[in-house]
Image 1 (spheres, rainbow, N blue to C red):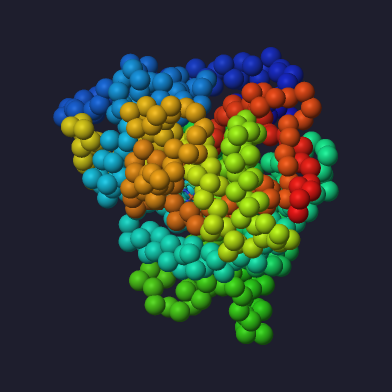
Image 2 (cartoon, helix red, strand yellow):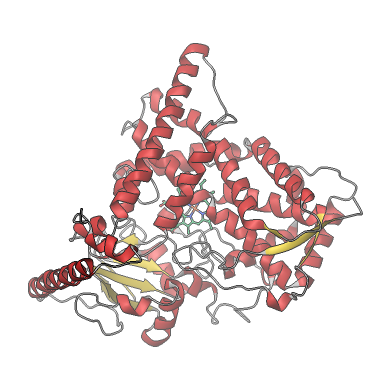
Length: 518
Ligand code: HEM
C-alpha cells in the first residue's frame, strides 16, 4: 500500500525514492507554497496600517522572512554576525514569528530590568503543548498568577540552597561511582561525555524520586531523546498557524510517543509513592515528596494536579542535566587546551585537600581558582547561548524602538559575553579575569548572563553548580590528564554542535592516570 498519510516525511526519509513519491512531494510542495503565499498576502494587508517603529534588520524574503539567514551556522553565531551589520537590536521575521534579537549588555538590561514584566512570558510551542502538559510547567509556561505560584514553589521549596544541600549523599554516591569508573579506565583514552551525563542524570533522578527509582534508565533515555527534540528552531513553531506542519514533519508524533512513555513512567512512580505513603506513612527526602506535600496541604491559590507536577519534573530533567554535563566537558576541554590553567587548578585542589583520602562537599568552599574556571567556562560556552525566548505581553520600547504585543524577544547571551566593549581579549580563556572582579552570573551584570536574569532567571544555579564543582574537583585531585598520543593542546577541537544548546561537536577524549601522591 502507498504511504498516503505523510508523504513528506516518507519521501524524505526513504533512501530509495519511488517516482510516485517524488511527484507527491513536488505536488505537496507547490500546494503548500501557494497556501503560505495566500496567508502572507492576507497578513500583509491586514497588518498594513499603524506600522510600529521596529528596529532595523536584514531584508526579508516573502513567506520565510529571514529564516535563510540563520540556517547554516549556529543560531547564536548567525545572530552575532548579523548584529555586527544591523546593530545590537534587530528585527527579524522568522516565518510567521516577529522576532527581536538583542546582542549587547546595555540593551539586555532593558529586557531583563526595565521591561522584565512586559517581556515575562514565553512563546507557545508544540513541545510545550505536548510534553509539558499544555505548557503548565515553569520553563516554557506563559506568565501569569499560576506561573508565579509555581516559580515560587520551585525557587523556595525545591531548589533552595538548603534543599539542594540535603541531596549531598546522592551527589557523593554518583560522583564516587564516576571516579571509580575513571580509575578503572586509567592508562586508556576515555570519552568523558557519556559517563558525565550518566552521573548528572542519576543525581537529578535521585534528587527527584529518591534512591529507588526503578525506571531510572528508561526515564533517562526518554529525556535524552527530548533533549534532542527541544534544541532546534522547528518549522512548525515558526509557522504556528499551520498546525499540519507539526504533523507532516513527524514532530508531533515523535513528541506524542515520548510524552506517552514518560507519562506512564511518572504514573507508576507516583502510584508507588502514594501507596507507600498511605500504607507505611513513609516520607522521603526528595522533590516528589515536597511536591506531594504541597499539593495535599491544600493551601494553594491555584491547586496543583499530578500533571502539573509531571510538567515540573520534565523541566528538572531537561533543564538540569545536559546544561551541567556539558559545562563539565567544556571546562575539561579548556583545561586540556590551556595546560597552565590545568596545572594551577590541580595545584589548588591538591594543596587544599592534602592528605585526604576522600573529599566531601564542604571542602569545596576553599576552592577559589576552580570557581573562576567554571565562570570562565560559562562565559565562553554558555549551555543556552540564546537563553530561552521571551514573549511580549505588554507593548514596550527598547532603545526607542517599539516592541509590539506577541513579539518574540531573544537575548544573545553569548554575544554579550564576548562583547569587546566589556571584555579584554574577549575570545581567550582566562579564568584570572574574574579574580577580584565583582562580575558575577547572578543576573545583575548583563554582560555575563549564562543563567539569564530577571523573573525568568534559572532557579537551578546552586543545584547545577555544586555537581559541576564537585565532579571537577575530584577529577583534578585523583587524576592526571593527558591527551591521547599524538595530540597537542592546540588540537583540542572546540567546535560547537548544531542546535540551541552549545554542546561540543567532537566529544572530548582524554587519558587519565592516577595521581600517585595521594
Ligand atoms: C550549568 C547549569 C545550568 C545552566 C547554565 C542553566 C541555564 C538556564 C537558562 C539560560 C535559563 C533561561 C533563563 C532565561 O530565560 O532568562 C534557565 C531556565 C531554567 N532552568 Fe536552568 N540552567 C542550569 C541548570 C539548571 C538546573 C540544575 C535546573 C533544575 C534542576 C534548572 C532548571 C531551570 C528552570 C526550571 C528554568 C526555567 C525558569 C523560568 O522560565 O522562569 N536549570 N536555565
